[in-house]
Image 1 (tube, rainbow, N blue to C red):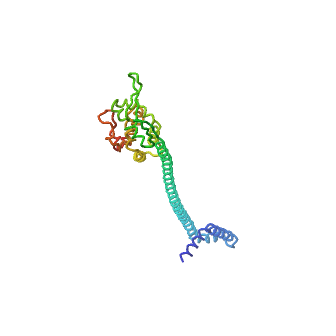
Image 2: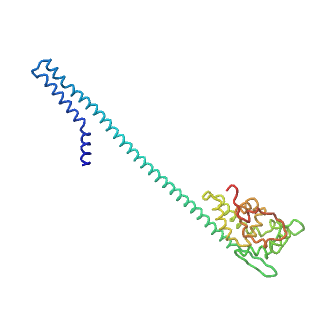
Length: 299
């Protein structure tokens, strides 16, 4: 029943103009026919006055039609507002979907950045291991010849092998010591800087510094915690005598300017065994952050 009424209303609304035109045309024809009726003008006037109520009725109908038109327009405006609300909701859903897609894209982009960084970092770490494996030293002592390769070269050169230190007094240009440990005991940090053995490890320390600098300056990761995590991986592959050599190299003229700040920032001496250092010799010092993780203020 409700569906039938709706159909009637729709039909009337669609054909209202045609209905009104038909009524106006019918009244015009009826009025035209009255001219030819065999009545006097007075009778016609009296007859026309009888339709005053009908005129009032038509005026009321016209006003009612105007009101109905206003109601129809109001309904149309209401439908338009509903359509606008639906459009706004659709736009809001579209905006949320775009924001989610943007967030997902940024997340993927961040993941790709980390992957790019890690690929480079682990390749550098692998090459660093190859540099260590390629180290070798040969020396003779007491008529016996020794050859040491790989990580053992750090211990051997610090404790046992013959170290020549450049001197400026007398006719002998070099002074010999058993291991870098004795050279430091004799001349302090100058003994380290003037000895011939540290030059054997130039490539090693340059590459170690390059890895630390890469992690420190990369724009692919920004937080100190992430950078500290990767430098900890590098520190984990250093043997105990590598840390001893790193300690003295960072204080020497070779590493004081560039390497030492990175050692202190990322606690690269955290696993250092101080009993392996030369006792009673003041060669300088590091900040506490070289031994314990310390978050920088700017981080």
